[in-house]
Length: 476
Image (tube, rainbow, N blue to C red):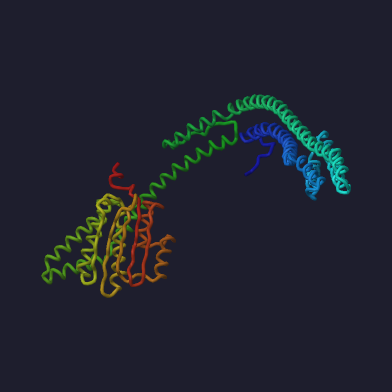
């Protein structure tokens, strides 16, 4: 994204918007940076105090009772275990707190606890070296009991000081929040006042030309392509936009006329291509077959063949329509197969099964006949012993599934890959490619056209199209 320089042309919209944005963002960024620094500092201090309280809270609440009891057992001879481990734990706890404590009163308390722990350790070891029950008991009562009581009291004092530290931090935060809120409100009022004034001036310069451009675009959208003079605007980009719109309208009008002529030529070309799909050899062979049937006295079969040929061409013409119903296309295929079966009665069998619910489904004319013709000439004829062609159509959800399946010679994997590639590479030609192109032209990405084949096991072409394009739907 290109960033506009601060010295952008003052007469352009982007220059004015850029300056408004800068003067809006800068005070907010300064305020945000100050608030961020303050809250980070508060968070660090509060986190330390909270951690100190948490650590201090882990101090053994029964420290005095456990140390006093173990020393009493030791003096009375009931146990030879000294509570040195408990004393060392208390010392380590005090040293941990000292590293993160900042409050002066709390530091004094920690120093006292460390000193008392050293004294308590010395007293315990002195009792260990002293002989005699009375002497030991005297030291226990006059030293150990008093020191453990002091350590426990100092721990609670430390918690009191740290809680007070957190309370002071919270009070400071509340004060700063009030100050910050007041500054923010004043800053917002000032910015809103400035932005309103700038926006009013900006609106006066560009609102009217933009409104005029919107009206002009609406007229173009409704089909008014008549040439009009460009809208005059102070902003050079709006003026360029207006000039460009009028130039675009002029070119669009000329292009629409050109497209109309090209579409007419395209339809004529498509019609010529469609008519070219009538294989003249098919017509000649059919007429020869009819003559042969008449000469051999098979007048009834000749009459049926003439009727099928008439139906074939009548359905092919279909009153000049390019899109016909599946029922009409099936009749066209049936007429074609009836004619071909007379010629290839020893090798050709066929079946047409169309779900009546799909009769009004619309497809491009001459979609299935090229597929059936391909099945006869490249599937049934090359395979000795003949085969069968099945044309089926069934409903699958909101789609129609149409299949043209034969039991002919099939395709090698290489040939199948070549045909599939030709569909994707927009190759030219008739037959499969022509049918595929016409379906894609009508349905786009919503239709699928798949080819599956195995050597000596026939070929299956599956077409899936949506059911939202029906004769009734088209009528509406």
